[in-house]
Length: 159
Ligand SMILES: C=C(O[C@@H]1C=C(C(=O)O)C=C[C@H]1O)C(=O)O
Image (cartoon, rainbow, N blue to C red; front, top):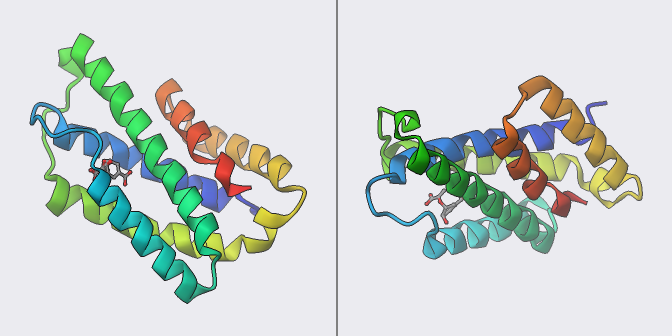
């Protein structure tokens, strides 16, 4: 039984997309934070949760944390690129055409995993299972310090 690992893995993949979000925004004057887009995501998540039989408030909390974690990674990358311009990605992806569709696809995967893990998320063992899942995902993906920090920011609301 993979437990919560598939869910945590999706969270980690969402944080990799944050690199593309940052690359799309760097040097454009576009702010890291877009509250209108965030609200659209959270409202859509709540609506789809109801349709899927997922508790909408739990889904909202979990997606709120995914978004906060993504901004943490974006800010970390902006700080890194400010001191090491050589690390700025050579290619700037288009946020609306290229990057947000990736996030939208991950939203669907995350919702499916939330449905799948309903009982595990409510169980008293959730925290322990979460620790194991994070360890498993980190062992497989070997995130750098910034993406580890992001992942730790992303997961607490799962339980
Ligand atoms: C990803 C973006 O940047 C921020 C993070 C978001 C997210 O993680 O979904 C949404 C809006 C922005 O606050 C974006 O603008 O699309």
